Image (tube, rainbow over all chains, first blue to last red; front, side, top):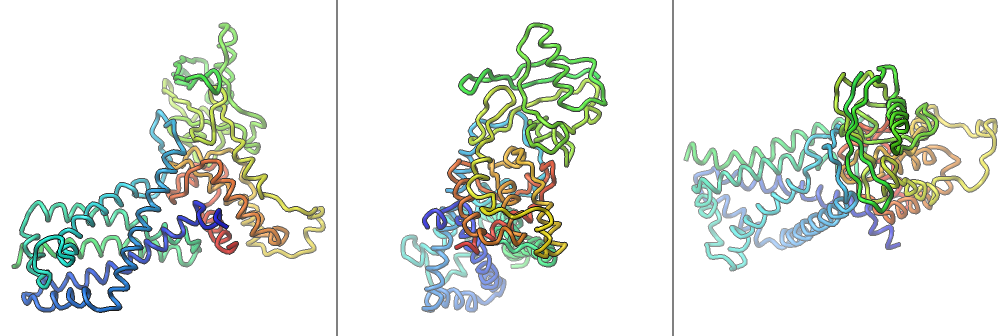
Length: 214
Length: 244
């Protein structure tokens, strides 16, 4: 039974499910972030407060954190196995035609992880009291961060990489789950493209709008 | 045609190999890639040198023996062809052609361009069969099969097990091969009674041999000489989850 539960195919199945769960969270996060565009800090801070205190959200938060840990650790385990599977590399670069960005998942994913760590320091660790700041006023924290050009550039680069990661991730997850057919696959591919452009663009637009109009 | 060849030469499994360059003239554009290598070998033998070792058998694209990594492509740059079917007219006068063996941990080099592909045989032996005699062709017709399933099973069954999917995959994953072997049985009534045991055993054997994992890049489908579809891998995944 262990062989079935921990086989490469099962690990990929778990990774795909974890990834899809994470995809559900991003639109919620973007929805809250868009409140930053209001001049009144109240709605954003209330939403942040609700997310930080409502018991059901706390449960989802733990689940989300576990999902991130599973997705990352399985991703690394599978990648290491992949590297070990070809100890002698080809002298000529492999020119086989592949889907866009699928070859760089570990690197785009790794970049997103680095951003997540920075992000956790900025916000989540304030909440936990590890980093100084006002946990009731994330609105000001966000505005302070978005006033630092270097941070905004890092933010944009990370969301570009997230977009590239998501473009392959969404359609790949459905392939891994075995949900591929003539009707749904073109739909899934279209949704992957739209999702991977709209979501990162939504996040990246917020500091730009703040810069231009606030 | 005149060509410059850079070929991986390795005396045996234990020795350290290296590329050796050869200038070859008198190549006809009508030759197959293997005939070009035959020409090189006959010249090497005439000069008292060791000929280049490479796998080949039927030379009509159905045995899966031949296979080498040519200028960055398993089986060469033309889609849907085995190395034996690859014609020299696809190469340019004076072109440099770099020829390497398949590279994967489960495919150790035996000599020059020959690798040991018995890992694929072990996966097949683990479950790629039906345990009872299915009868002759006429008996197969006693159980009706839809045209769609029949066609898809056939399209999967034409996998020749050459290992190009492993060679093309950045992770050295044999999922396209395994999925074709599983699909050909999963789609037909004769394969159904042992479907669960089959998929579990073949996946376990795949993992045991140290192959990498599929990351859905599609390189295998692009380089498969029999143009086996990625849809088979999705089917393998479905079959595997059904086997829990």
